[in-house]
Image (cartoon, rainbow, N blue to C red; front, side, top):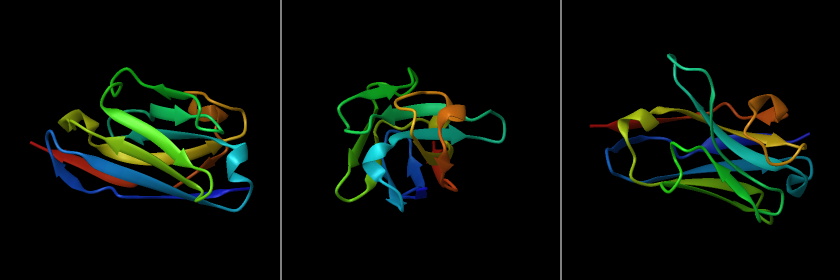
Length: 123
């Protein structure tokens, strides 16, 4: 079993950048694909990005492709989400998730979730 804790969320202006971090503990971190999801009160949970166990493969939602970059450091048990050119519609609670089933955009296939970190993009 692995625990994940997100950090880095804050208020940022339109066009700005922000890096979210996800720290994992317990379990074998390199056995898990990792994903970032986001949610607002008005929308269901939305896939943002995912990265394979080794970091060799990544997958992005169309809405963030070219602006966001997911990465991981297995030695440090960390996952990152670099967010550039932020837009008001990126405002959400961002959650990190770990899954044994491999790279996927489906939240139901992730096994462990963090509490989330709030990102607010102000115009």
